[in-house]
Length: 202
Ligand code: GRF
Image 1 (cartoon, rainbow, N blue to C red):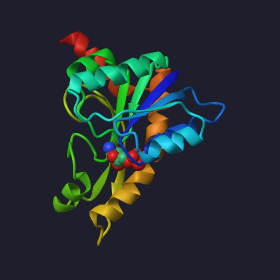
Image 2 (image 1 turned 135 degrees about the horizontal axis):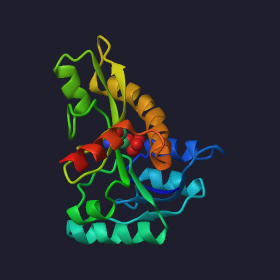
Image 3 (image 1 turned 180 degrees about the horizontal axis):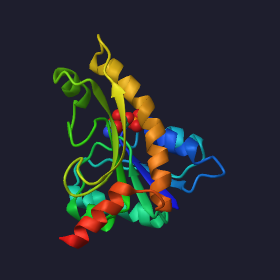
């Protein structure tokens, strides 16, 4: 399966997907890494690994206009799936509809808790015993959509948002490639299948 990854910055989750894809047994390959910032450090990393990249600033463009530019690049690259990895842009409904059930996102919280930004601080402030990360199917609502996999990570005494984020990031890197591999092979997706069944029953 051909996967395109959308990033906005560092791209460590993208890198984790990329390195996992080097294994012979990996069922997906990364065909394009695109960013809404031509200077995103992750683009240089992907290029150095021999992956096609596309960087284009969203500045001055309407959301749907910019998304159409990205969409055209994804289609040109022959992507079957899109993986959002630290992509800090809200997506237009048209773009989401065009990749329905073929676009995943990773989010640093145990969804449905703490959608949006500042997830680590929110989990600490709430006194939660665990924070973590989730991979979910992207729907029109931010950080919504069926959850395909999660990793809980214990919050330690003295944790700050930064120390917690660093530990969760390690879990993110493990989780994303595993869930993406499962998803593209459609072998083991309890939440996804359950959701389909539910949708049909409605
Ligand atoms: C990750 O924590 C991801 O879950 C969140 O933004 C961060 C991106 O980091 N959405 P990176 O660019 O993958 O290193």
